[in-house]
Image (cartoon, rainbow, N blue to C red):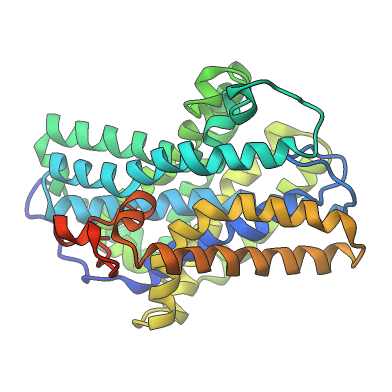
Length: 390
């Protein structure tokens, strides 16, 4: 490992990594809608009808969506740190992520909590109706807080040890890992599996949703995200491994499918250590497969993909209250669970996307909900779109 020379410059826009990141954000819509149709599983709104396959669908998405997202976030963090000093980079992250997080906590989450309370019998007074417990302060925004924790620690480490900012992992062992990638991947996946079973399992034992550490600061989710964020950063600094990571491999797909099936089986039988172990293995496998498939199908610039990527954060911020409102409205119809799930998912996306179309044309709203700084102070008063600063 060396601190210089800096890793070779990556393309200005790595379209497949970007496309997968945007897709993972939007996948939160069908995931959250599926949670409403899991029989015997509590959610924000009570289940009126359910299908066991919805439980499996939600579980499969849960296994890979956030681990893959944090891996990609680690990759882009390493990429940007090569171009900017740690403090400048972190300030930009707090604008891009922290501002939408704070504004959404004060505007979107209370609406979400009130909608959920409308079909319950809580009757909580005053501010407790807006935030009934510590676990309802962040709601679906928790991953933004965890991402800021990870990036803050990364910036702190790079400030304390400046060489980390441009460290390259290129070398003999890195080249061997790229040449024997499947073997290397299996060892890495067993590592994430052991971490999930032991470290994450211990974190689950000492926290619960009512603890401030978990409810407000999402300690367990932070612990779960750490290895994937670190792997993502390492991939950017290891060119041979990164090149291999971009390729599809049938053995990895088969092993990922087997691990996913075992995790679903363990979830059905409430064998949590087994579930965490196989889910940890499958999560890294899913991330590799998704990046490889993204490289195959989305390696060129596309206006449609760019639009999805640009809109994904705002769509995600607003989707959950819309989905809950539509789910509650769906209590009145009996069109079949899968038809309702499909309709609610599509309508939720369209409504949230329409909100983004409005927000992007109002610079002040674009700053508050997307963290996009207007091109000039006067831009806040003009109704024109501001260019995204990725």
